Length: 275
Image (tube, rainbow, N blue to C red; front, side):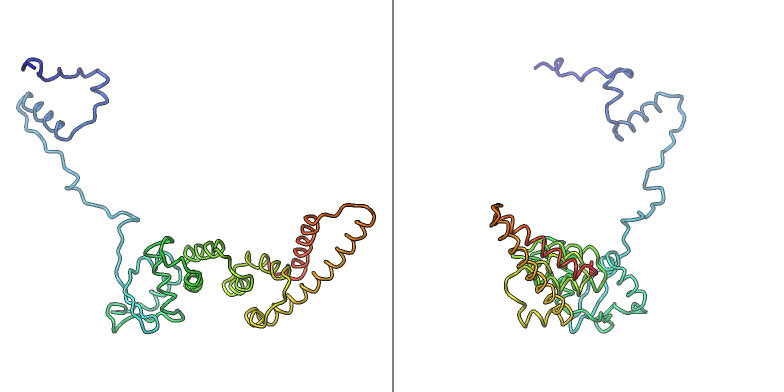
């Protein structure tokens, strides 16, 4: 190809569409300004202040003034970011105001004692704060229960919500006795009714160990509910026999639906004040 064929393209006219839409370039703009200055009347070109010359402002959200704080949980020291704890927990906002005096939390000897939490529980919480819900820690039902315990006690609503949802979706599911126990201990009313229904509908009575976990009052109410369910089932089957003798069809599926609704009604009558 000849040199003439490789000549630079003609400049765009100011009114052309491409000239109007072409992105500006700081280098080209400076060259254009300099050229205009040389072509002018010889006046001195004023330097436009660059962004670096202006005072920088701190971002209202993402200028994080963070520091590491040393906490003692049982006989273990943790050195973690104060920011994450204060951001996600009203408990820690108040806790640090009370406990972080001069030099507190800066050295191992001046570690701030975190009471009423076990080392294992705090580890589970930190895994959630630093690694999120995808942490392998949460493949274990036990670790999820520990996270629920710590998040409830230390006021971490996001961690608590995750623990409840993950336990709700666990496979195999939690035993109904475990669900009642956790619901009462950590204030999860949505778990109570389904668990009571399951305990009242099952064939075998409560075991001694289950009664010990549930406590005297809940065990007594469950016994009363199971007795009422049994009486109503007997009455329902008596009516089914009468319908069958009169020539009306009675299917197994229909009886199962009737019994399920019967159990729910009894549970609502006896435990309804709980939800």
